[in-house]
Length: 337
Image (cartoon, rainbow, N blue to C red; front, side, top):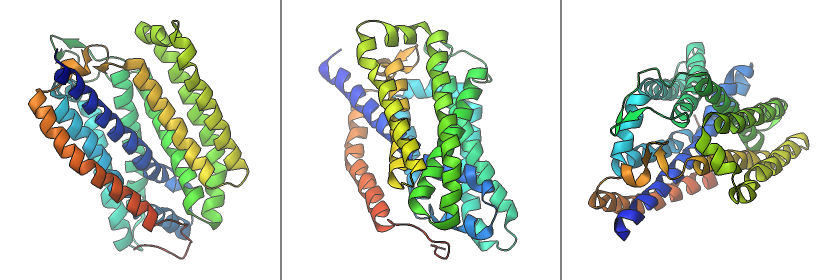
């Protein structure tokens, strides 16, 4: 393997990781407000909740497109394994996102006959989050691969572990949604979100603990990665940092802070994502295919990276600009529709 064939897949894997991490954080909080939507009973509260995310939600999903295109273009062999293995939850995810997006726009024009769109918004958000957890769990528990091809059944992904990951993703996104509302809203919505945030934090941490125990018990290579020496001395910082961010989030929720709970919840998510990466690196399809084995031809990788080098700064600049322009809180009598 020459230097170019070694380096390009690593760079592409970093682009993929950035895309996935940004999607989890940014689309996570607006999926989270959809999950929490039924718990806001008053119409004025529901309007305020949706207006808090109205300028951001469609731009946030750009990162999902970036991640999918990077996987397809940069790692086609992995894409050809993961997609057939996860076809049903991926299909559910895409349909749920479509339903949710349509409901977001149609809810405003359908008033006062918009209850079905409220249900579609909440249901689509919850189903999309659950489907993402199913996909994550299905990949983590290892896909059956023979001769570089998916060799399992259409329902291999459906296990107690993947269902637990799905529920954990719903709880985690709901926490992001609640802490986002602490940051972006005032009045009754902010108070209701603060009451929900603490139990959601406990629930999310419970699922993180379950995954942290379940994966090394189920998969020997992950146990060796985390608990062998000298790895254990370096990787022990991950749960320590998670505990610190959890305390900061709890403190912020209980003491009326606005930015601290949201920033801390993001920190917990990124640490959990980082822990999963550490558990599986260098595999893209655990434990069957590494990033180098899955990579496309170097010329294809270079072509894509040139495009990514142009578009990625534009996407980042657009994201920063939108968050800056629409900074501040959304009051009950304000909106963008």
